[in-house]
Image (cartoon, rainbow, N blue to C red; front, side):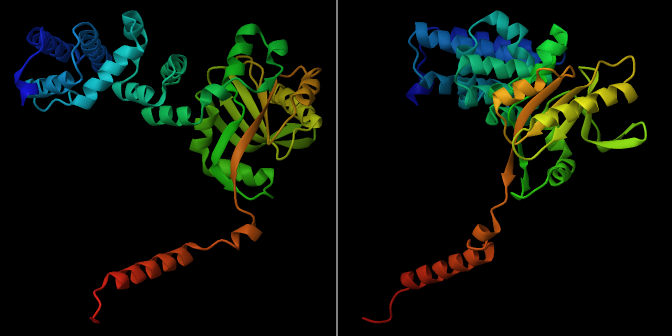
Length: 354
């Protein structure tokens, strides 16, 4: 009770000031709810942080503030002790008011708590902040991208883009490629062929598009490509809305082979000649394989004038049959659990013997 009855120096003035700010923010919230809320929370966090540093306020004052603010604004969420601690953390993470106003506040509060919880390095926190703004990620997608360590994969594919594309197009095209791609939403056997993985992609098309990144629009699978009197089939065909060009994806199991690049270059030339319109930029190709050697890829792309990127991918493999047969089934495990419960029950029963 002493924490709630005694007030540190300047507390009453701060409480009144915060009440005023909250009311003003509530009026403006009808026009820019999310942005104003983040700015408000940052300002509250800054005040708490400053008072604790300058006035020597202890951590208990946060509980006192939460109590009084919740009493003043009943039914309004966001002023619990936990929320106030998040506000203080937000102020610690982003001390520059200009950045908060111009960049940070563009993300909703729920995104902010994810960044604060999962990223302790300022550089990485800002990287994901700006990426979430640029690509319009939801909160769940932001969590997924952080878990998959997107910052380590984006732009890491081996390509010839710098040589065959204009600088502006080259940089953007390089950024949309990753290495490796994470296709853990698939579970296939070790002996799976390209078509098995491709069918898995079609069954999980939403997950595939999410992993490819924003801007990819699915056109088709095994798309026929007619050249003279022959027909070829593209594994996967996409259109990238920001790049305004077709993206041909060739899927291969195993280690990269140089001849695969030549075949993909042929497909790109044929797509440009038969499908591309004058309003669209030349197509680019992505060759996905399970593994690659850098020098082999570089030599394979050296004399190819079609824009091609080579990336690896990761998928979840089924356990081999020989191993799987040796493992207990779910039913077996359930029987063990029931048996153990019965045995434990018997041990706990009182004995009739003296």
